[in-house]
Image (cartoon, rainbow, N blue to C red; front, side, top):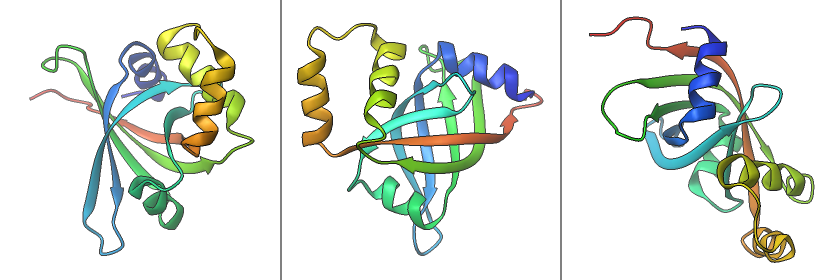
Length: 136
């Protein structure tokens, strides 16, 4: 699958499972909400203290299974390299992330305070591969 086609799927479908690697090499899976930024990178909001954040700081390889809203049918597996964007740098990215998924927030000051209180970060993944290339 071309990366451009995967990005278009992720712009329309936001429910995913993120796979990272635990320190012993076993997979750690997390349900996440994804979107795509203007540069085509996958964005995920999470907490600084989350296991997925710690895993990605140690090993930035990330895999996603992005599902359509009906679960069955089309889906995309995307792989790439993640970077963690912490606050305060992440704040405007978090605002864009929210807008991409839900539109305008009724109180942006409250949203920003919640992001700081929760110690939110952005996981930004540069995709290197996507599929499936065949259906079975």
